[in-house]
Image 1 (cartoon, rainbow, N blue to C red):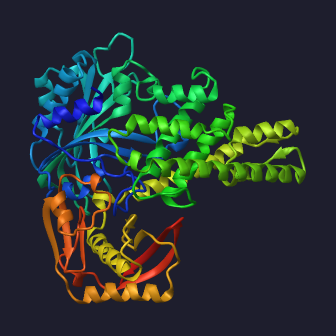
Image 2: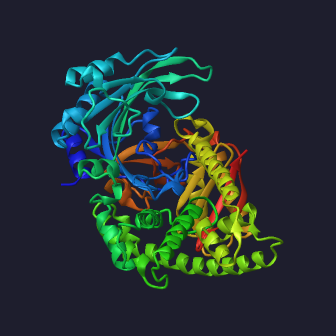
Image 3: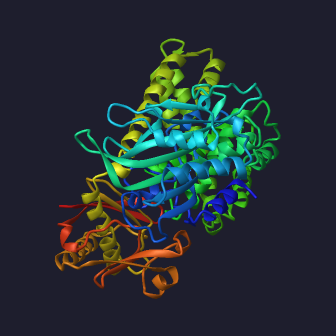
Length: 582
């Protein structure tokens, strides 16, 4: 039995209900392009909304983080990963959470206690030392010398204010060295494997702290890292999670992993992530914006490294890797089977496009060196080749060397670093949403997406449904299948319908029922399998009835005036509407 199954079975035995993994593309969450952690899809419930499965939940969640995309290639970074999580929504707290973490690690995974170290919150000017967590660990048998007290690393908050609290982290000594008596979290031989977050405070906008009446537990454990630890390997890509993919890559390249680790790690990681993004029911396609841009970047970076391994690009190497990944994960994620053909088409089409782009880049390179006044390619031109044509600096240096030209690689690295910091800042800005988001306006927009969906069905046809949406405090965005650009008349009809429904002051009704009952009642629910057995259904008069996780207003009269500000193509066969509530 693998780690995911062991984990879920353990927490089910402790009274938890398993919930399905949310899609990798978040639904109505403005904070990120992708779900980056197991807690993200549960934000409404961590804020107090009742979950249809109760107060004890567990799952394995598909996550994608791209902030450090360019660092993939080492032994432990991944863009896609799976996170194991268990939650208490106002139910149990520190005693049970810590005791069960310890029990799972030592009794189920059989990790020797002498290889474990933990951190607890040391306290600060506002919040005291977490004496309770410390005492629980001591009672469980963790010696005082193996408990480190830290302040900055053991306090969690999503943004500048909102729910927050101390956490306790568990570390494993991953080394053949003699285990030191004292645990030092700064010693890289100690690797974090689990984190229990205790949401017990609320930080107000004036900086003061108050106790939360509704306390939650949010815990997380990374599947890839923990599997590598349990199997005794210091390279995540040498674990059983990756070896079937790496072996297939060795077959298609005719080369060994040893000596080609960086390129093989990048190809394996990026193709796996591309498979999960393109298999998601949000129907993301490679593009120059948002999730589509990330998907394009991943595929193109994988192709560049395939070229470095001299894999014939015209061969079906990407298909073979994708099919291997689908085979490995399909028992857990049904969308990989449902959308297999879509995945293969996305990879093959983007490969063809990028090959043409590379050819253009080579022509641009010839043009650039033909106009050089000296024998040096400056940082701006080198970065243009990277950013516009996907040329890694190594390729530019190699091509330039053949022409007797040097490249300002140091200047390129400075520009590249600035580009990375800009990307990270953008990601950090996006993540400021979540628990710290402006819930009132976002709640209004959330309800408005249901009315927009209903209006589009009336104006365009019943085949319209939501493929994806994104909500910020400034506007809403809604993607839907449509084979043509909407006419001014169609847009006007949609606006009129939505505003008429708002003016009608329809109540928004919330009900919990089984999936089967929801379908029988006429509720719209694309991709039924991604919902738990008990679902929440929102009805707006006789206009709209959808499965949804909320939040919503109580009455449409709260929404204001709906206005479409833009209608455009999102990808082939998919249109995008941006609208505001005035």
